[in-house]
Length: 426
Image 1 (cartoon, rainbow, N blue to C red):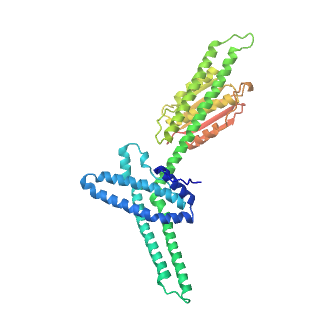
Image 2 (tube, rainbow, N blue to C red; image 1 turned 60 degrees about the horizontal axis):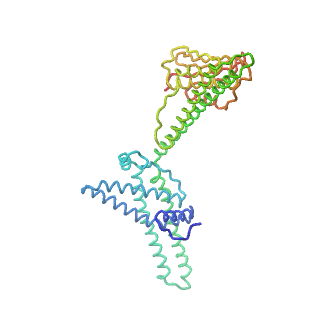
Image 3 (cartoon, helix red, strand yellow; image 1 turned 120 degrees about the horizontal axis):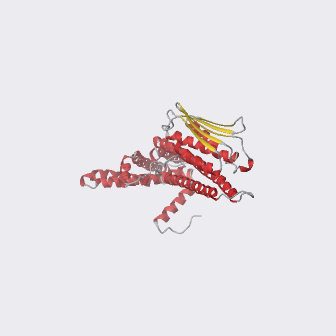
């Protein structure tokens, strides 16, 4: 319920006006208020036009350029108010175009203010508002003139009363119809002049699509890295516990336990660094900044990835066949993720069986395999997975033009195999 006290400040007055406009809602009350507002808005638009033309003529005095920039900034500001007015009263959804104030640096803001098509479309909109205001005043004037003539200037008698009443009703209806048409014309023109251009909307959709794709990729990378780190740490913690509490007659192995704890520390630091990197990228995107580039994992990092697993008790071997030095970085990262996910799944579902990670290049194709033998014991499973790792890898392999298969082997083990093309890879 709006307060009945009179507002004592500008922001309070603006809030009160906005509450009244929202209370009107789209419909005939909103269109009526919009039609009534056409006259003062038309006068304001005419004043802005005179100010713009006066600024152009004032260039010869050396201050015209500053005045032009000031008037253009005012026009863009009032265009935002007009956008909200059309949205509240007419229910017109107007996509917001380029925001000049979000541009970095004063020079760039000034340049975009002058060069932006949205600025000059706003100038055109206020020109249309001048015409609509003039048309509204003309409609009211002739409507009122006709109504007054029929009501007081005509000869009323028993024979002419009904026809004159019909003409007066027709005059009112015609006036309202013309005003309704003017409001509908404004509602149809506003999105074209006050909103983003089709090119800007397409660019915004493309940017949004790229941003969603980047966030999806970050989520997959975070899943792979943290999932692998936690699984490997759990394996190493289990191995360390067993060495520190050995069966009776078995000597303690403090060096092995110390090494396992060191790998747990390394895995934890890696997971935290990956989490921090992802959060930094997301914050940069939310602030409208380009995130800083980061070093993606490559085939050279595979040995470090697997060494911690070996120390934790997983017998895993790495086999590199062919020349992989010139493999594109994007394919190297994907191959790294395949080995990472494959070895993580071995730990989750098979324990610590003999495992082989193979990366083989054959012409323009890179084949990545992670194959393990039959599970040695179910007791050594560190825990179940989330179920999205293979699906995410399959999507990434398909996006790169490759394939991914995951199936049991005849010997009772499991094989994860990715075939990735090198031709055309970035």
